Length: 303
Image 1 (spheres, rainbow, N blue to C red):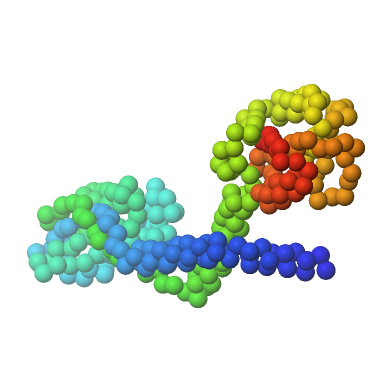
Image 2 (image 1 turned 180 degrees about the vertical axis):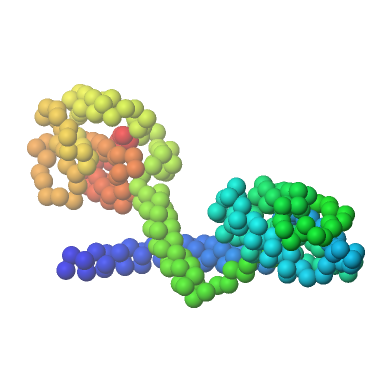
C-alpha cells in the first residue's frame, strides 16, 4: 500500500512538472543520438600505428633465391617461441603479429606489428640477431643478402562496433534513467525557484521589508526574539518558526491567520516572518490577504 502511494505521488509529481520532464526527455534523447553517432563514427575511423619491417634476399648454395615465405615464417616463429628471453605475453600474440611476405623481387618482408611500439622493436631486434648471428640451422647453408630494417606507418581500420541489440537496450535503459534523474533534479530546482521565497522575490522592493537573511542562524534567532520582546503595539506575528522563546503580552504568534483564534487585544499591526528558501510563496500570499482582515499595517522580516 505504501509503495502504491509513493508511485502515485511520483506520477503526480511528474504530471505537475510535465514541461520540465519534457525538456529532460529532449536532452536525454539528444545525448542518446550523440552517443550512437559517436559510436558509429569511431567504428568507421582508422587507427594510425607503426610496425617494424625487416627485408632480405635469401639465396641457396646455387645462388638461386628462396621463395617460400610461409617456411620462413614458421622457422622464425619456432625460434621466437623457444627463446626464453621473450615474455609469454609477447609469445601469445606472435602467430598473429608476425607476418612474412615475398615481393616481386623475391625479397622477404618480415613485419612485426599490433604490439606496442617498444614491443614491436623488441621482436624485430630478436629476429635481426637470429639472422645476423646465423643461430638458426635452416639459414646456415644459405646466404642472406641486403638485410635491412625500417619502421613503417600502418593504417588499420578499427574493428567495427556494431550496435547489437544488447547495446541498444543498454542505451535505452541509460537514456530512461537519465530522463528520470535529470527531470527530477530540474523539477526540484525550478520548484524551489518558483515556489519558495528567495532574494529575488518581488516583495523585497517593498520598503517595509527587513532582510536579515545574510546573518548567521544564531544572530537571526537573537534578532527576532529581541524584536518581538520590544514590540509595544498590539501585534499578530505570523511565522512558521516554532522555536521562539520570548514573553510579551502585546504579541500573539500564529502560523496561519486562517486558523480560528481570538486575539486578546485589538490588533494594530501584522508582522510576518518569512524564511528564505523555506517559506512558500503561496503561504505568503495567503497570509497577506488574510492580514487585511486584522490590519492594513503589515511589516515583513526575511530571515
